[in-house]
Length: 274
Length: 282
Image 1: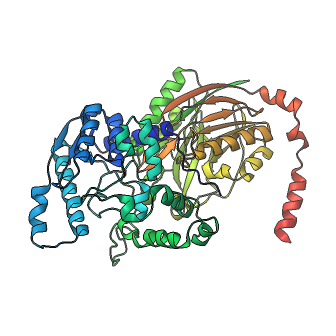
Image 2 (image 1 turned 90 degrees about the vertical axis):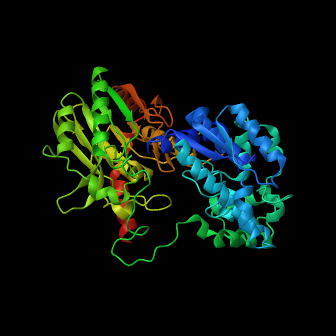
Image 3 (image 1 turned 120 degrees about the vertical axis):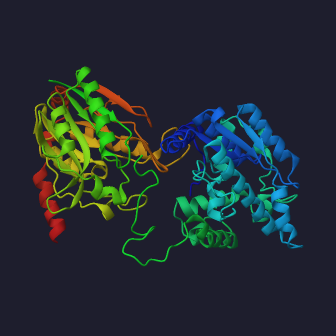
């Protein structure tokens, strides 16, 4: 069994910048907007977008909540300064708090989802104002695990890094010159104080990426993953997460009635005619 | 005899034949100015690749009364052309097709015989498979054409070789895939290996024209190549970018290589036929 998650960053960079340029310009746009969380995923998507479109054509949006870590804002600012693009900072506290206040004791997960969706609203509003498409920042690991808020951070017009595992995003980040503090800090959705991805998921990206690579890319059966040394409970848990979160990866099913139905037998790429 | 060959590694607009035709005609003009004899376009060069429900909308006929082919046939008076298109036959079956045009005539049409319908591919859902693999005579000698998945199978190039083709013209719209830490995608490495292998094993020229550009998230990796009968790479287009790659093919290399290495002379197609019949009818 060989688990090779290494990438050639220059090859990936070439494909992804061309992808961004092609998929934005062919529909008549030349600009993009992106929510910069201060984390590595949005940093990578952001730098790729600046390389593809020119920094002046990428609007960086910072969206702090009152409990957001100060580092998040600072790290986003480091990128804005380094790459010299326009930016706006729009705190979401005043959008989010009244809804949360309606239900004292609201669980953190609901608050987190509300924040993620508030950020989506701002991104799409800025998209219209700046005349730029929303660049997504979800990586392959989180998409497979469903570790994302539907219509929140998962909402975008195009996603350059959705076929890269988290550990591959880290390799690309180094090649793109993203500051080390952003690469080195523990990944976090920063929805509440002290939250980390790996704490919440219960395993590390390093571990789960290897397993996902076998299950998804190499088409190993779960029992074969156990045979090569992965813990059975871990394999089962991850496999179930992938299965249960399929709904987040597809458009909502439309009930078929007519002889030609969107999604079943009305089939066109988004790039139709361009 | 020398053949000035140009590979038109282009991006296409999905479903916009008019825009793609204009690009063809622009490149024809350029290739003519550069003294080229033959210009080869990639798979589905007039239409784009992931056509899905656009297939019946973009189909055409390789005939002089077809408005698109009329212009291409006119252009072929100055330079031989290979173009990729959707062919709709008289019974309204749709094929992925390549046409060889020369001096205002359609010399040969190949219908893709292997339609990949697995993984990211869904061709069998939208197209009918071709059912013949034939070499054909051109003013430069006997050629064969194959389209993408056709040459992922070993038999079509073998058949064309045995049918007399000394130059194989491959076209594709190959989506790039496979990261492994190397500076080249696995799909590119694989195609280059097999094309070099056909040129070496059959002591023939193998020219491959691939696409560039994107359709949704699919990248087309370009990297068009020409291998000579020794298996030597004699021309290569850049990866991922549009390019007009020109090279001079010295057809006398066939003589030199086969004088040294008589693989064609020693090949035993009757033995192949006998053994295949035994295998198929046992």
